[in-house]
Every structure is written in C-alpha cells, then in structure tokens.
Length: 303
Image 1 (cartoon, helix red, strand yellow):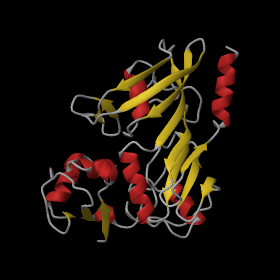
Image 2: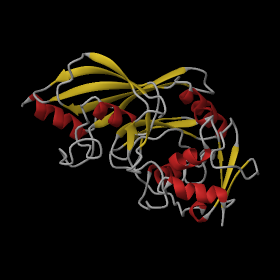
Image 3: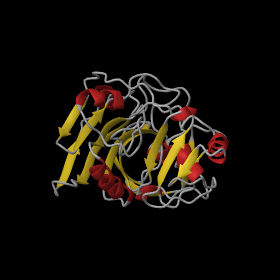
C-alpha cells in the first residue's frame, strides 16, 4: 500500500475528518466506508490516529494508507488543452464540456490532469498524486475557466483567497422557465443528499452557500442568466437554481430527466478574477461560450 498526504487549507478548517475525506478523496465511497478506513488506522492526522469526527485545523497533514490510495497510473496525454494564460507559477485553463478534472478510483478515462502533465513539468502536490495543481474544480459537463497551481506556495495562497471569497468566478447559464426577478441572491445551505450519494441538496445544517444571479435575456420558456459565486460548494449553481424552480437546461441530475441537447448542462464559467500571489497584481480572464451554447441561444431567439 502506498501513502497519500493531504494538507488542510483554510476552506476546510472545522470540517469533520470523515466529511472532508468523503468530499475530497474518497469520492466514490460511502461515508460509512470512510469511517471504517479511519477506525482501522488507515487514516492519520499529523501522524496520529484520530476519531472520525475530528475537527480539522489549518495545515493539518492527513495521511491516507488504503487500497484506494494507491497511486493511479497517470500518464501524460496530449488533450490539446485551451491554455488561456501561463507563467512560472500558474495556468488558467478553459476546460471543455465533457472533461473530468481529475482521475478517481472509478474513472480511468483521460482527465484534465492527464492533459496538464503533458503541458507542464511541475504542478503543486498539496492535493495528492491524483489532483496535482488542482485548486478548484468545475463539473465534468460544465465548461470554462479554472486556475491551476504549479507549486505549493502559490497553491496555498490561491486556496486561502478562494476560502476568503477573494477569487471572483462568474458563470453564464440557461435555465428552465422565466425568472421573474431581474437579479437576486440565493442564500441556502448545501450538503450531500442523505439518500443519493452523488447528489447535493439544500438542507438545514448544510454549509452556507450563496449565489448571486442576474437575468441577461428571457425567451419563451427559458432564461439566460449570469451567476456569481460567493461560496464554492459542490454543484452549487445547479442545486440553487433547481431550488428556486429554475434548473439548468440539460442537467438531468437536478432538472428534467429528458435533457435538451446532447452535451451536458448549459453552464459555462465565463470569467475568473484573482490576485496573482507572486506578480502582486489583479488579473481578469474571460472565455466565450462554447459553440453548442451559442447555437442553443440562437435557436431560442428564433423560438
């Protein structure tokens, strides 16, 4: 068995150890399985065995030793990544729809990580061997911008800024129905669904989640909106828009099972703003909507 180390960043301070591992490392396992791994001594914090409900502290080192922590055979693959920006410390990538960000024990197709290994020689190691450089994720079927760290110093600073809401992320989305308000804020806590492991849901006791939205254009039965994340919960925009009765077009998990189109949900990370940790300057990046997204808008305009 090999070992993997994870370092706790500000965003996860105070979380239960089992909940943290369920949402970041053992993505395909039940919470019960994670608790068994911890109780069996396969997970240690700062070299010590702890309880499943241990509250994480900043810079805790979590060491995982289990069958699922074996290093996956990740080879560099030329995926013709759309690199929007690159310097010695970081990259900004425009991820295409349909691409998974990093490998998992149950997913062995090429991911963004495979493509990154082809493009650059060094990536940060804070998130372990299967998530090198990954500061934040966007869903497989969501397209758009994300920042990747080349070293641990930059990764830690970006993660801290993300947790303190200093990184601005704007999305554009097509949703079902006519959104009446021209703009609004959804402030509703999100946690993993108690019955459906792969889904998230608005639920009392979940983590605070805040999404700001503005209407850009209304069609006969749909609305084009922009969304800005104040927090970064898993599936946040998808869950929040479904919560207010306007699920995202093409999202069978939170909307109608009969999807429109064939390439995933119409959700695109269109703008990314952050303060560069080493250049010490504010940077803004934008990415146009994918062709299928623009075609759908044209079709809706024609009725």
